[in-house]
Amino acid sequence: MKKTQYFKQFTDEKTFSKLVRIKTMPLFMEHIKKYGDKIGVVDEQEITYNQIYDDALALAFKLKENDINEKENVGVFAPNNYDFVKASLGTMAYGAVATLFPQQLNDTALYYSMLKYNIKALFYAKELENVVELTKEKLPNIKFIKIENFEKKLTSFSSSIKTDDPACIVLTSGTTGKHKGAILSHKALLTGVWNGALGLKEPFDQVYVSLIPFTHVFGLIRNLLTGLYTGSKVYITPDMKQLFKTIKIANPTILVLVPALAEIFLKLSKEVGMGILGNNLKVVIAGGAHVSPYLTLEFNKLGIHFCPGYGLTESANLVSGNPEPTYKPRSIGKLYPNQQYKIVNNELRIKGDNLMIKYYNDEEENKKAFDEEGYFRTGDLVHIDEEGFLYITGRIKEIIVLPNGENVSPAYIENKINELEEVQDSLVYDETNENGVTILVAELLPRQRALAGKNIENLQQFFEQKIDKVNKSLDSYEKINKVVIRTEDFARTPSLKIIRPERKKK
Image (cartoon, rainbow, N blue to C red):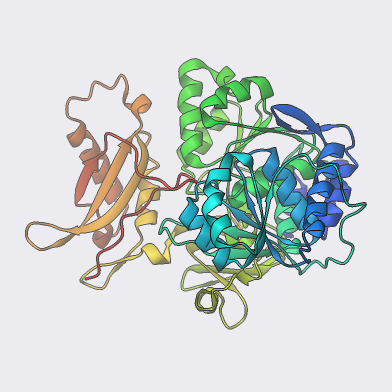
């Protein structure tokens, strides 16, 4: 079955016909304008699609007024709020390149990021004005524009933008601390948006709550842009402390989550009832890190269509999605259309409409990123079963090379450990014991709800016995030799991935 046909089967013909391919962000804005006076975004107040369109035109006018040219880099520095929405949309539809700066950047990091990405103008929210002051002083030639409600606006967006022109730069958020800027073309960005609507029975007229930063590719494409593309309503959470208040008001029909958040929501749903997530939730899209089959199956038991997927910043978020989660709960689904792939030494390599142009101003990384045929090296170790379902087995850069030359994928072992009902998350690494021997260690974060009522006398012994069972499914060199039980969560990135400790060079 062709890739498009596979995803098409999950909705009806009439609905699928509405999932039109859009080529550029100016055309995207014309598309969402058709939703007229429907509410598109809720952030303290309700904002219609007409208002989103007009506000984006006003932000675009500020760029023209400040002599910013098409294809020049414009920074967008705002929290997850409507300021971010209208500044990013206005910049991209104007034809400039929206460079998305996480709100966590301090003044020094912002200054160096402005230099690295050759920023010509910076849209910034009033909440971050103090952070911007240092950069203002050091870079007097940059245009600094506080995001406000501007009256003057362009009469239309750019008509000269081509599909392969750059639309935005999204900073990678890996676990090593060093970020790269992936340049996404209009084609790549909007292919990601289209992919986001595939595989759902009812992609249109949904209600979202934004829980992932819009500066993260998952939040930007799958939560914000796919939401707008489908004429849905996107509630913005002003503060994560007000999360459940926002959910109560919004009554979402769909949530886009990273696994760590899904874990919290599952726990609360079982403790206080599904009402904690509103009364209309039907779908959860999960990604950004490994999704345990436990989460997939438990949410589906509660009547929520919980769909895991896989993507990268460099691939405009979406590479694969699993619309059949209970059939293949361990899989991250099938590859989306308009991609080619190959597997070389177990590594997935891809190219296609959704792939980035390159990393900005980073030729060394670009040389590493692409092979001689133009395929992007994902760095992910995979296998594909006989039905075309994809499985992640590890990351190349995380491979542990043992003294005997054997290669160990910690992610592969962690995935097996995380299938245990009593384990919420795990981290596998090597260390040298008191005898100078290299051993494998598994740190476990227990799932407290699953432990409740089991009358476990010795928690350490209990988990060692569990790990012994996991060891039986592993090769001899992959076996865990030491178990550490955590009493608090792992250190995590802003997207809630576990931060792996830096490996000592041997």
